Image (cartoon, rainbow, N blue to C red):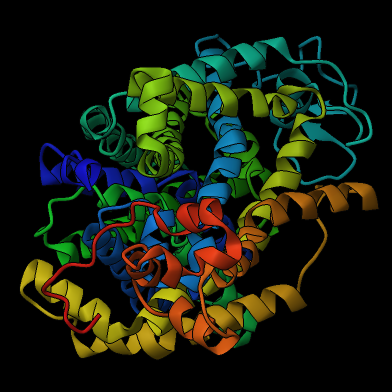
Length: 579
C-alpha cells in the first residue's frame, strides 16, 4: 500500500479535465465522424449520434472514471478488484492500448511529413509537375476512376511510396522512419515526468486545435459552394434513420471516440484526488468531445461544398474514403485556397496536436499498469521512472517500423481493422459485464457517494444495468454478422494476411479467458465455490489475508499460492460494509 498512498495526483484538477478532453478528442473527430456523417446521409447521422451520447457515452464514461478514481489503480488492478473472474479485461485494455499506440503514432508521422512539406511554394500536391507523378495525374479535382489527383499521388507515390500489396514488403522509407523517431521523442517529452509533465502539455495540445478549427471554419464558409456542403451536413435524409447500420455506426463512433474500454481515461482518473467531482468531468469531456466532432463536421463539409462547386457535381457524389479524407481530399481543397501554405501548416499542426494527446494517453496506460504491478522491481532495474518510460517508448517505436516501410499502409490498415473494430467491441462488452453486473450499479453508486457525497441518480443506474449492456451486445452481434475482411481501397488482403490480422486481434482478446482460467485455478474450493469467489469484489484481496493452508497452498505449492494472491491490490475501504 505504500506506493498507492504516495501515488501522485494532478497539480490542478483542470489538468485532468484537459487531459481527458485531449484523450477523447483525436483524429477520429476530424475524419471518422465527418466520413460517417457523409456515408449515413448527412444530418440523419446526428440524430442517433446524440441519442447514443446520452444513453451510452456519458453513463459509461462516468462508470470508468468512478472505478479509476475509487481504486486509484490502472485498468488491470481496478478490474481485478471489482471482478476477479474478469481481471483479464483490464489486461486486454492494456494490450489493445499498447498495440494501438505502435501504429497510431504513424498517423502522427504522416501529419509531421505533411507539415514539413507545407512550407514549400507551391505546395507539392498542388500540381502534377513532379518526378513522382504518373501520366494519369490531373491537377484538377476529379471523380474519375481512370485518373488520380496530384493530392492522391503525393500521398501514395511520394510520401508512402507504397508497394503493390502486403506480399511486397519493399524498402524502408528512411524519411518516415526519422519522422517516426521524432514523433516518439515528442511523446516521451510529454509523459516522462508522469502526470506532472502531461498536465502542463495538455494546456496547449487540448486547447490550440480549437483556435485552428475556428480559423478554418471562418475561412471555409466564405468559399463558393460552402453553403451546399453545410446544408448537406445539417439537413437530415430521414429515410436513413430506418437503417440499423446508421444506429450501430453512431453507437460505435461515440464508443471509440470517447475511448471506452481502452483504459486510458480509467488510468488517468486514478491520479485524481479522492473527492474529485466525477460527474462534472464526465459531462465536460463527453460533451466537448461531441461538440468538437460537430465543429469539425462544419469545417469539413464546408470544404466538401467548395470541392463540389469546383467539380460541378452534387456533394453526395464526391469520392470520399476514410482516412484519405484528412490526407487526400482536404489538402486537395486548400491547395486551391488563397494563402494555401498558411492553411496547410495550420491544419497539419492541428492534426499533430490532436494525435499527440491521444497517443500519450495510450502509452500512459502501459506505464501506469506496469508501475502499479512491478514498481519496486522496475525502480530497482531502471533506477528512475524516466528511464522506464524511455524503454516503453523505444519498444513501441521499434514495433512501429513495419508501418514506415513501403508496405506500411497495408500493415497499418490491417492492424487498425482488427484492433479498433474487432477487439474493442469484445473488450467493451466484458468490461460492462464486469463493472455493471458483477460489481453492480449499487456498489458503484455507494463508491460515488463515499467520494463525492452524492449517489448516482436513477438515469445512470438504469443505463448501467440495462441500456448500456444491451446496446453493446447488439453492436457486438451486428459487428460479427456484418463483419467484412480488411481491405485497402480496391485491394483485398489475402487469406494469410487476414490470419495475421486475427492473431493481432487475439493478442488482446485472449487475456480475457486466460485471466478467468487463472483466477479459477488459484482460488480454493469446489468449482461452485471458485465461481462464487471469482465474482466477489476484492475476492483475491481477501484471499491474500487467509492463512497459507486455507489458500490451498498444500495442493498447488507455496510459490504459486504466494504469487497468486499477494499481488498488492488496493485495500477494500473500511467504510464499504456492503462489499
